[in-house]
Image 1 (cartoon, rainbow, N blue to C red):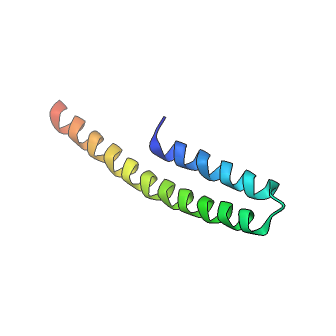
Image 2 (cartoon, rainbow, N blue to C red; image 1 turned 60 degrees about the vertical axis):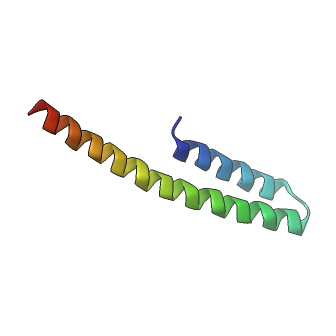
Length: 64
C-alpha cells in the first residue's frame, strides 16, 4: 500500500467520524483532520508520480 492510499483512507475515516458525530467540536476536529490527511495525500501523490517518472527514465537509460 502506498502512503497516499493510507492517507486517503484516513481522510475518509475522519469524514465518516465527522458525519456520525453529534457534537460540533468533535465534528470540527474530524473535519480539520480530514483536511490535513487530504493535503498529505495530495503531496504524497505528487511525490509518488515524480518517483515513478524518475524510475521510468532510469530504466530507459539502463536499457539503452
